[in-house]
Amino acid sequence: MTAATAALTDTFREVMAGVCTPVSVVTVMVDGRPHGTTVSGSWPGLWPKINQLAREKI
Image (tube, rainbow, N blue to C red; front, top):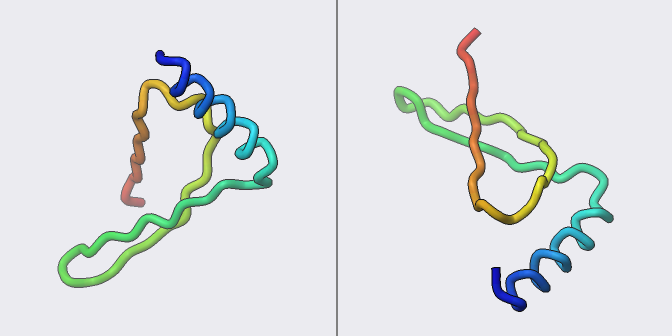
């Protein structure tokens, strides 16, 4: 990790520490119909840059 990346990572973590609940809205089209949900989670870090979303049909 470069010094610039480390500084950006530290700044990002500091800013996100002040956010009560980071939320993303995920939307998809299935058979021509829109579906959406909100997703919240923790921010373990910026490296590796991997996010995963898994939904189960109930």
